[in-house]
Length: 382
Ligand code: MUC
Ligand code: MG
Image (tube, rainbow, N blue to C red; front, side, top):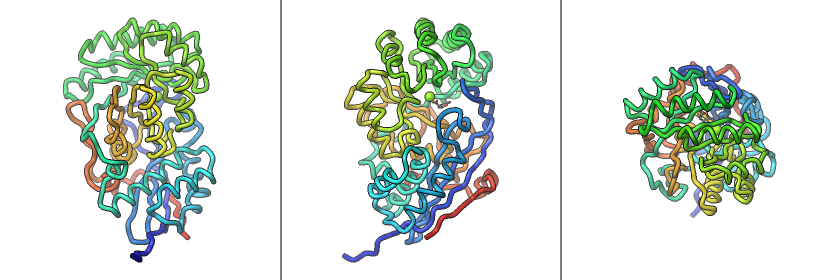
């Protein structure tokens, strides 16, 4: 038949600054605010799609900043996509990969909005577009990162009591290895068998420090260490992976399917923290998942501490993944004083629920957007 092609009409971006519920102390930055880049794509048939591109701690975590993400979209990605077929996701992804190197978080924000729009137009969820959900909820970790062991223990106890989380990721790497190991041991001792304790070093250690660290952590009952050394130290990651019983998880080392293949070939991890934003979008993240599955590696759904929007999008993809041996950390909205969704993501019984509904299953709360937006909105039209 002769149905007219739906086109991408407009791409609007804005930066949102949302306070966190407490200081979130990481090895490279302390977050008191999370900054998200929001993308709204409007299509020629009147439909729209929403997406999010978020990083952590300005430029201290990775090479993209919120301002850079917005600028990459406004200056390069949006002008290339406006006027094009809205339903052809592969066409859009391939075009942008040719025109824009790197900038994975910027690509992710726009790609999520395109999937959301396609799902809404077809009346199906994004999980359905990825072949169908096999979970309606997923186990969800919480990060203990107040910077104080006593506060962390109280927080952990409360999370266990209210049955919200029984997996804890501790952010370490800021203090000496010895002090960090003592901090982890205290927390593990306090929660005992009621919870799984893991750590994220966010690349802070040298190989030498990591050897002491992994030895101490595994003796303390910690189950997993995430990215102990810099992303480019693939051989060091391989040595640590084969040298200790504690599981080694790659995070910063995984920037899309090419990295996933290289890390797999080098045996430089036991587990992949798959982040949609770091992978370059939902499709690229699904390719990273496929590589881990084919290699028999463990999987974990990772976050860039997105708002409910980016979290909903990630949940759509991870609902389709057969086995997430290490669960997920899709708690981003809970770290923020307020979420930006009309209907927040729900958490209970140690799990996060996969949002129902069409597209990514999320709608924005316009009052919250107006309140948290930085004054830099921009709309690209044909
Ligand atoms: C990271 O490096 O994994 C995820 C959870 C959290 O608290 O910080 C992040 C980033
Ligand atoms: Mg990490």
